[in-house]
Image (cartoon, rainbow, N blue to C red; front, top):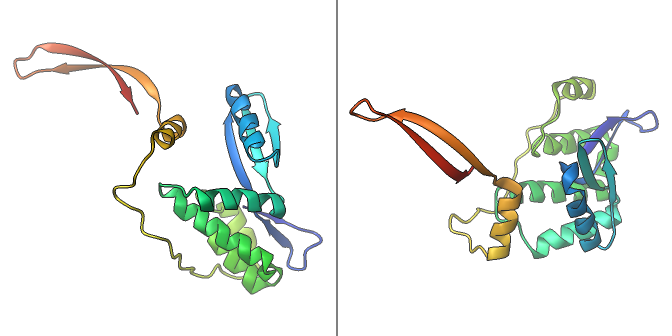
Amino acid sequence: MFITKSNTGKIGFTVGPCFNITLHIRDLDTLRAIQVFFNGIGKITTTDKFASYRVRSRTELQIIIDHFTNYPLKTSKLNQFFTFVRIYNLIGEKVHINVTGFLGIAALVNKLNHPLSDKLLTELSVLGSLPDVKLEHPVLSNNPKLDPSWVSGFIAGEGSFTYFARTRTNKLGITLKDYTLSME
């Protein structure tokens, strides 16, 4: 989601849905493969170090929503998805074109993985304060059924293969070095 100042909007701000994946530039081919997987929708942009895949069109976002509805996320990111869909639907209902609706959406955006910056919150305060919004999410299973492909994908996104050395002293005062290959 993005919230920006607007010279053309009635309330001086605009909000829009956005699905985004940002990876190191070395993983640009992965983003291209994801774009192909989603039927070529969205745009890929690059900098010297990073590449981003973004989908902003409401029509194209529906493809993303349909995918994650049919293949639900298994971590707390599922809650972020439900909040995103709620905001997407509210924007579709044109709730954001009045101050009360806009502030309600901004409050929901503030609950996503990257809360609104203090600077933006200060700018939005001219419209009023953000309401306290309640989020209703399904209870995540403590023992989800995981298939091997999901585990590989999760590790690709969240894990790292690393090597570290640790020096410790045992009860006898002998210094030991441990060398470990681990997942962090």
